[in-house]
Image 1: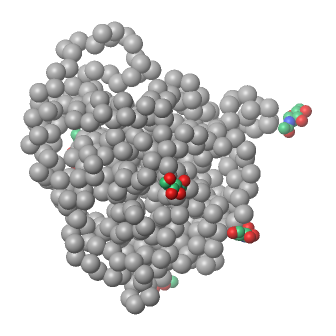
Image 2: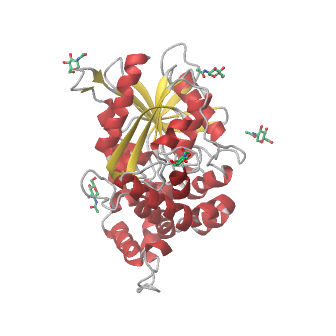
Image 3: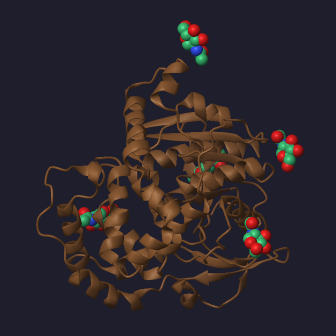
Length: 412
Ligand SMILES: *[C@@H]1O[C@H](CO)[C@@H](O)[C@H](O)[C@H]1NC(C)=O
Ligand SMILES: *[C@@H]1O[C@H](CO)[C@@H](O)[C@H](O)[C@H]1NC(C)=O
Ligand SMILES: *[C@@H]1O[C@H](CO)[C@@H](O)[C@H](O)[C@H]1NC(C)=O
Ligand SMILES: *[C@@H]1O[C@H](CO)[C@@H](O)[C@H](O)[C@H]1NC(C)=O
Ligand SMILES: *[C@@H]1O[C@H](CO)[C@@H](O)[C@H](O)[C@H]1NC(C)=O
């Protein structure tokens, strides 16, 4: 199942000296052997020449012309080796925690006071969701108002079931992932206190860490919280007035909760059906996943600060396909069938929390709601970007994380 196990380098390197209990192995992405088969499949996949209903629109799923363009690029204008080399510019490792193999990027700053920061991806994001922000965050940056410097040691793990980490047991939920990642940060890497950011499933896992590990998680930032977003009626009943950006976000969230539940129900109830149907069908995986990158990102994707374009999407699908993890990633939904809590309560932690709002995200929580579930220091609003801030608007996302980092550095 997990092809990546074949590609581990079995060179054991302890990190952090004698006190370290676990060891880590350096890891390089090496999936090139699957590429010829992938190319044959992509090239030989027939798609209709004309859409069934040309006026159906995006509410009915991906547009045929877009999928055909992507297929053409995958055959004629795409090079896996380039992508693999880019991934391998990041220092990557695997470690064993219990029975799980956990893959992670660990990029350290030159600065000995750097803030440890855990970044948690979602579906269908993978670690590739964060690539544009990792290196800039390791660099020292001087806050122009205070003259203080900030930089980070980044840890970016792959959720079990996603490319390069192992398959989790069927009965594991985000609670076990939260424990796994806290162990990674503290016991394996020796960061007794750290900050984290989570989005999508990473937001749910990160939130669990925020409430469960109040001595080690000393700052948390989210772009998604695992609480059922309020309806327009709830918001009105609470006398909350929204600005123009928030009204756009509310409409998008309402659309997601009504029109976009197809994939969610499928993956929650029948992960094997879609997982097996598309197991050896890369163009099928592209259609299934690609539609979400289009729907959930900023409509201006690929322009301005956004680095999310067709190449990014092909990179992520190629990663899923070549690592054989499409099916196991989809199982994340089945293993966590009710991710949104309805009871908005404060967890037992005094650690501060930040929230990054991006206008074109597919889910929306007004500041008043976010403030109920943590010690909210700031609710940062951005008029560019969507569900994938590390791709949709890296500069704004970096700014938000540095704000959290400065606070962490001053208080921990
Ligand atoms: C911040 O970093 C700059 C450049 O690395 C350095 O010149 C400066 O002394 C640092 N400031 C503080 C307050 O450490
Ligand atoms: C999962 O199932 C195994 C085998 O029945 C059991 O030992 C384990 O405690 C379960 N884990 C969780 C998190 O429920
Ligand atoms: C909203 O405003 C109305 C009218 O001023 C008031 O009766 C109601 O109690 C308010 N609701 C909340 C939740 O504050
Ligand atoms: C997508 O953006 C990257 C840079 O972020 C660029 O190298 C690549 O050529 C772009 N792809 C397309 C199809 O425009
Ligand atoms: C941290 O969690 C422990 C339980 O693990 C709890 O007793 C303690 O009160 C919590 N601290 C804060 C500040 O809420």
